[in-house]
Length: 414
Ligand SMILES: *Cc1c(COP(=O)(O)O)cnc(C)c1O
Image (cartoon, rainbow, N blue to C red; front, side, top):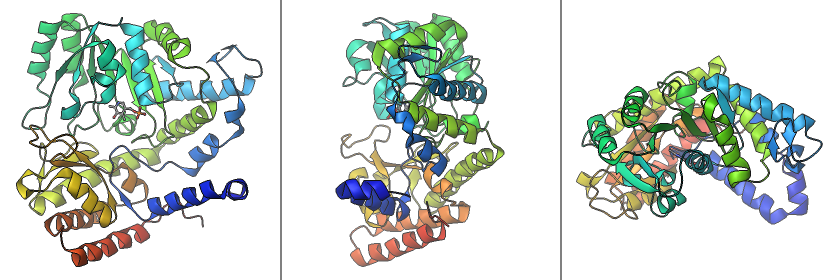
């Protein structure tokens, strides 16, 4: 990675960036929402496009000199529509949360009712958490998951009939089963609600055709671009043609000023990459790796919420080990594995402590991990949990993690 100019101008920042690169290279990244984007994406994001103001949309800008920016943004829009089979795409949201905010703004007035998945059951902050705009300005009813780690569609239907929401949201930050978009649409139609599918986590799997698509079911589809889709940090909103104008107005001038066109260029590159056969193979390997990891952990006597995963992630349920998510996430960090603590259904611990750890495979799959590597990762995780107080054992486990990292180098220029 070329940091020549940063090094010259700002050595402190250069040092921090280099240290972060080293951390990424020498850590097994199992945070389910993270990934390692391509050098092509990073170059686009680091380009001169960052200099340009381009409020408005292609060919309808408030600033002059946008002819090349228009090419970039139109390519990103076209690729998003083709990849996800949707009519319209707005590629300007700065993040996934802002993409959702724009859908709220385009479809509801403050005080209107929304039905979404509860945060502690795997939903996202921006789906109606009381500390988020969505919960502060809207009337939120939430559904959860059952003891099998699944959405109970009969329960969702009952709640929809009882509460008559204007908008129903499906899609989660921590859900390991296939989402039935068709069922959600039937429920939404039955009560006259609109459906938003937030595919932030599973976008890469949907793009590869390895998770059912919400196209044809959800009027609105939001996603982040930096999770399994492996692009730069950011969001995209897609929708049926009839809502295109409302969505575009909600993004600008509703919530944002100038779009980040350098990031939009990175999104365009990532969308192109995601349309290639190699990406299908990559996404298939993400799922194979998640299944191998889950199987490995269960073989070591650990519990997974809902049992075998159907996508890229899972939650380790630590209740029977007597350990907490907070402590074990810190122990994993000691052995070279990054993951985040997470609540499990009916968690006896507070959301700050938790009894679970969320694990995902998009990032390690990018650096080339295969099933046998995931089995080794499962053994390292289990041993770390079982011998969390034994510093010698933890040091040995860290060596095993480092072996896997050097077997599958990341961002090594050749
Ligand atoms: C990650 C995520 C988001 C938010 O993305 P940010 O870019 O962090 O704002 C929204 N929805 C879901 C389901 C997510 O998992």
